[in-house]
Length: 69
Image (cartoon, rainbow, N blue to C red; front, side):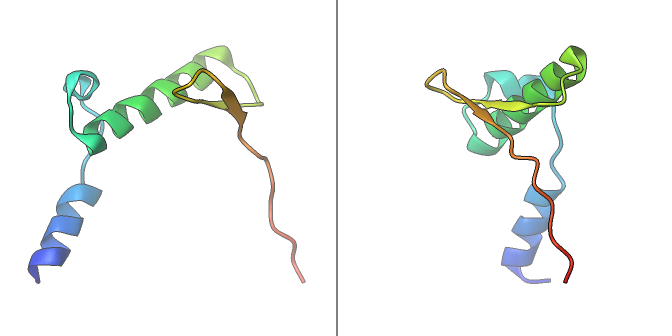
């Protein structure tokens, strides 16, 4: 396995840890933010999920499928 493949497998194998909220690592903070969004949506029980923007603006998640030909 090449060095790049090994690094990719290491990153892809990461999952949320409680310590990710305090981490300065981009991957860890992204996992923490995603975990928080999923947790919030689950607890709210809301169908129309939004992505919390850093600037305080909520971005609605589009519910678009694909069209079969």
